[in-house]
Image 1: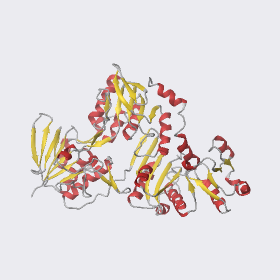
Image 2 (image 1 turned 90 degrees about the vertical axis):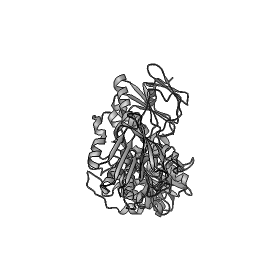
Image 3 (image 1 turned 45 degrees about the vertical axis):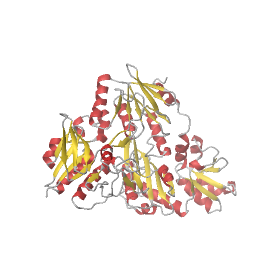
Image 4 (image 1 turned 135 degrees about the vertical axis):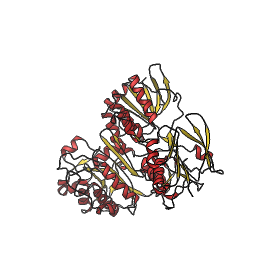
Length: 565
């Protein structure tokens, strides 16, 4: 018997489900509803169209209703919104946006892929025509049209997540001044730990992006020629328009009104087979709660990759393949001007909240061997369980080579690998691409040394007044900047100056990135001293401490461009 499958929503999840279902079942009747005009578009590319990195708007439109219908024999209905699900009758009510007509369509199975909508905080004046969001092609068209028509000079972006930072870059590329307001103490607050975000703060300043952290927008006020953005701190910023990029929330209205179970995080609850509480209804994509394999708890992770895979899996299960979705670990990557920022698994804040016993390491390797021209430094943080050493998460900030390393670490998180496994991974090497001991291997070596006690460590944020701190860099390095109160004895002189070491105290040792200080710690330990390596060295100490220092004069001057009142 021919089955009838209705799919609510296109883009990543819905379109993938429709295409896969047709490949598996040539006889099925498949109808896909999309309330907007586009069924399959590259929403991750929208900021780059506004910035003109992508010049042709049509490049964002991956499939048209006609092309999808022709290739996959799917009845695609755009500008048609599913209003209601009648589970007892197994039918949905649809509003045709073209003529306002309402009609019903029956189903054997229903796949919900409604996605997520931009979160609009309850801010006075947020409905202004000068306040935009960015989630769809029409949203991008509206922003682009405003820029083309009004030739604005300044924009304020509310939120420093993925979209917020990408829009800051692309508005600068378009010739505008950009300011970002973030209520958290650092950018990418749900994805990156604060000491890793500090380098992004510095880079945004270099690229003339003003940054207000630990502050929030309380109101938007139109001025006739522009917009005043009032902050809770009492400041008022003057700009031509604003973009709300305060995150997204799952679209669950349709599911909730149909009586489907909603999970603790506010998303549609689905089984590992992606079935909802109604076995005839599947749910996929940004609206669905998924299991976080590291934290073993439900989470919402709105990313295109998981949505595509879930769409394919729902179609497989409709065809009797019995697939199980393993969960989502939140692997992400983004470009912030000249930086690449990537993360996977759980960050330190989530691990701490979940009560996981973990340790962390920091390394700062080059993306390929130093003697080959063009080596670029990466800043890596890897979190792992104690005592097993299972990889729980990782974050990397750099320019070159970040994408390759985060993918390897993502696989290690998914497959339950340990720091000991990272030591023995056989990875491709040639001087233009990596090192004989790749950064991933180095993370394994450091992690194993920590767990085995070969390298006792302390973290920079745990130092206390009165601690004995030993700087084993050269005198010139020390004079350019050092941890306050540190004593300088270069590592190559240490064996001859052991008599200068204090007895009965822990000696906290550091160098630039932690390699020379590791050698110094081994010398001290084997000569009867109690010594610990400051993990990640002076570069990590800077990341922990400089995020709290007073902002630079150039940052203050940049903020003045927004006419702070």
